[in-house]
Length: 181
Image 1: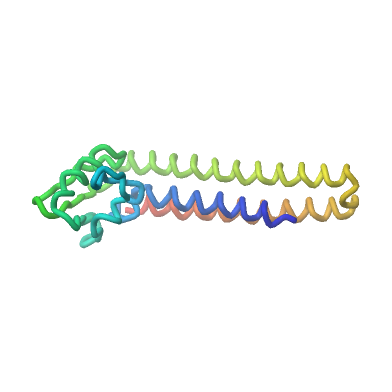
Image 2 (image 1 turned 135 degrees about the horizontal axis):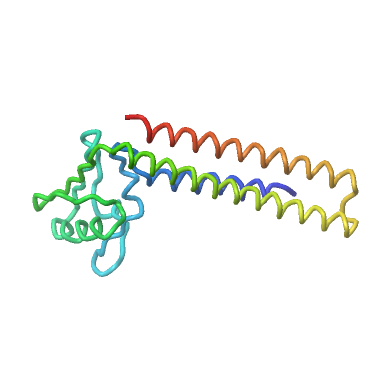
């Protein structure tokens, strides 16, 4: 009965993790390019499907397109993205060099991390509200007894506390990662 709400809460946590994977913490991370799409024969294609992506050094991502004709398209996609990085190319490969983050930029990123984390916690609380509303309705329609309703409401609260705690842990870890020089 409560599994659909638990699944929704778990999806909120996974969405938060996915969002955090695209936040640059001073290190080169190939997941930063997960959302990039490149025009490949007129079709918008994920970058991972048209190039090899590796991290040869801590602050560098190396992109080796499978076809050299894609170099210009990939550069265009990177410049159009919100990465804020200028790609360097030798005609066959593309290098993305990530500069050291300034203290000010780190603080901005932590604020962003906390805001996204807060949004995830709000989503979890909204799911709790939906679950409690559904239980209340079932109780009014005499589908469940008063005792069952209270027990299920308690379980929903425990589930909510668990997922909020998990979100807070993820927020803390990402904030620490960003602030670590």
